[in-house]
Length: 63
Image (cartoon, one colour):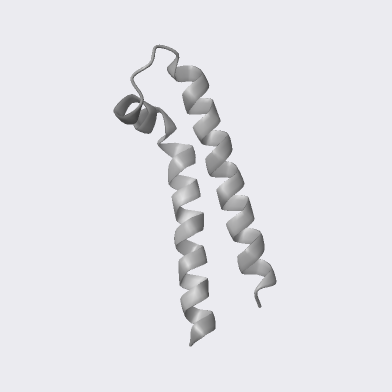
């Protein structure tokens, strides 16, 4: 039962990373108000990619 809960939490972490990748422009427009949104959106995409990869690796090796 505990492993199922951990797998569900990791799946949500992966989902959050993927959402950060695809909606980076919208998120930066909503939360950040500085002029250079290109750097902020690329940074958010990199962060989302790293979160998705780390969550996927933990889920893969958690078997």
